[in-house]
Image 1 (cartoon, rainbow, N blue to C red):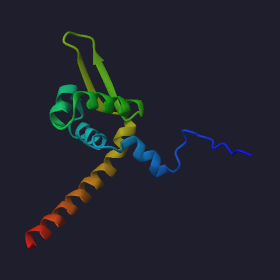
Image 2 (image 1 turned 45 degrees about the horizontal axis):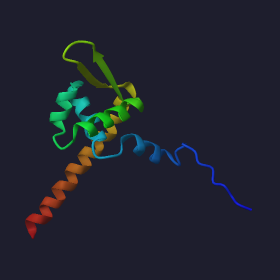
Image 3 (image 1 turned 90 degrees about the vertical axis):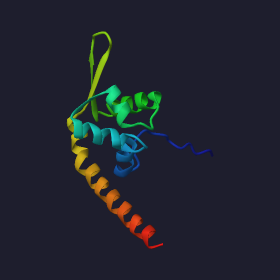
Image 4 (image 1 turned 135 degrees about the horizontal axis):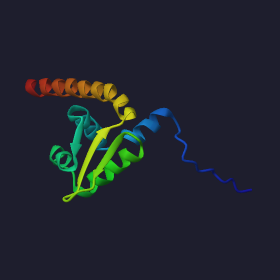
Length: 118
């Protein structure tokens, strides 16, 4: 008898759930920049993330918006104006991102000390 594996969209664990929402190269940085600036326009995000393509930025902010982490406000004017800000749920992530930032700074410092000894 053939067993059929049931496929669901349910996360396998809370850590998996969290990293699906904030994982990737840009999401954490976008959330952090929005935290530091409160509100940013698309062009400001593009300048802050100089290594991102317009297509990837658009895709990433849409995913963050779909996950309820950022708010997108569209002003119906010419030229179009769009502003991004953190939602309440997005703000809840900031202490964790700050901790990761501190951890990263400490690791970079350790690596630099090791390199200077070589």
